Image 1: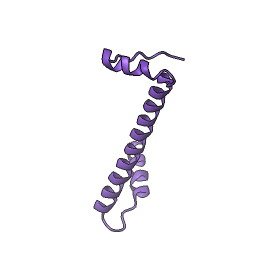
Image 2: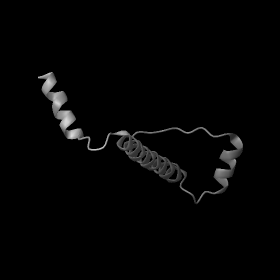
Image 3: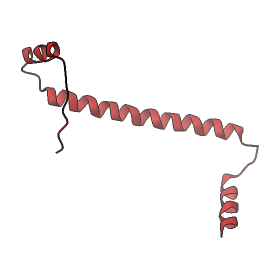
Image 4: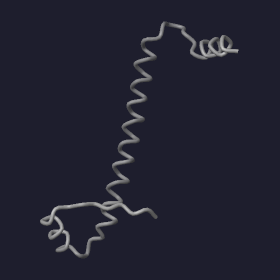
Length: 76
């Protein structure tokens, strides 16, 4: 498993040392994992919103599948 080093100021380190029962590596690992999941969820939500906006701009009856096939035929 790779190692990540985190720097904290001396005051924070002293406070952490007072709480010896806490596994700080686990706390940091869980926090990083949660932040990654949050970022992934946000990216998905943004993609859904973007897709909705684009769909609303498309003319009535526009078929994206037909358009993609047309592009592919032009390239071959």
